[in-house]
Length: 129
Image (tube, rainbow, N blue to C red):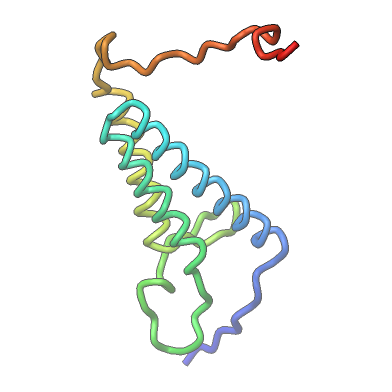
């Protein structure tokens, strides 16, 4: 029987986890914005992928016993010394798939369906004098 000591994460791993969570939330937010603005449902692959990466990073735990569940298994990144759980790995794959599909199959929006550009008025028109 081999006993393994579970070590707490290093400060570098904590910083990488925080940055990954922030980038995943930014990807999900930008994908929702672009899907709503362009009316292209393919952007929602990026939204779902970003949310899965976020759930994978937030839900990652260290194993506390002999029982290993889906959150404790995963892939090891040898260069960085990090472990990616299956939920985050599926999110990364889904985000890349969504990006690829969006770039390859993006529809051309007709001129009548395009949102109107923002037109700024001159400051003199706002004066009450």
